[in-house]
Amino acid sequence: MSNSLDDLGVFVAVVRAGGFRSAARGLGLSPATVSETIARLEARLDTRLLTRTTRSVTPTEAGRELAARIAPLLAEAEDALAAVQSRRGTLHGRLVLNVPGAVMVDILPPLIEAFMALHPEVEVEIMVDDRMVDAVAAQCDAGIRYGEALAQDMIAVPLGPRRQQAALAAAPSYLARAGVPAHPRDLLGHDCLRGRFSSGAPIPWEFERDGEAITLDVPARLTIGTNGAAAMIGHAISGMGLCMAFRNWLEPHFASGALVPVLADWWPAFEGPYLYFHGRRPPPPLRAFVDFLRAEGRDGA
Image (cartoon, rainbow, N blue to C red; front, side):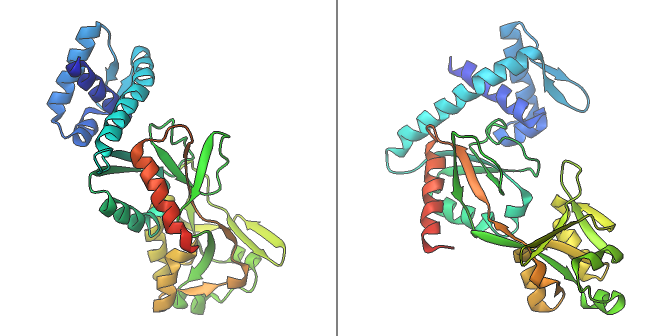
């Protein structure tokens, strides 16, 4: 029976990873061992579970049904084992988070390091994804999002700064060459460096002041996906044009003089990120992480 459960665990890992090599890396096994395990499981069930091509591995209809039914059971078994181990005084288990790239720059990394220092036996996996996917459906314990509408059975816990701002910036060399915009609509005649969501939609430039809100579809001289935000800021520093990004990303460059704030009285503010998860029976590592975040937030950060 234990071997069967191990084989099922390998199968679920392959489905989640979308391939043998990625699953093998996550499991600490060789790709050959993973492939042999899947072959053994398919032979035992007399059913093909995965369709293999040179480029991808996808579950068959039977494989999708098996993964959907067995993954929650395996997760519950892992949670039960972690809970028993944790009663001995040391927290064990695994925490899987689905997060946008924005929180990986300077918000989440120090929190994760401090949490893992408190709980050295906990393993953490961070899936960085800028698509608005359901973290639970993606087989994660919790997700981190900005301003996402949540289902009634979800709990949201603030993480990091309660308020953030989007900021507009340019290099002194660009402003000396192109002039300093006096109003957001002046940006329509400037070189702009824009981001694009993973969905393919360009990120709009939004401004607000004294109750007036303006959303602009500025012309993009250069467009970069959200995962390339650091490169976009680098291009702005080199003088290619104006960029709009999280203020906390740009502050070090303002301090150094590499970038100059532009239209600062028009910068919009928004709520900081939240950790969200199902309220029913969170696994021990997630409960501990939520308690850690709430303790961190007592000082009103």
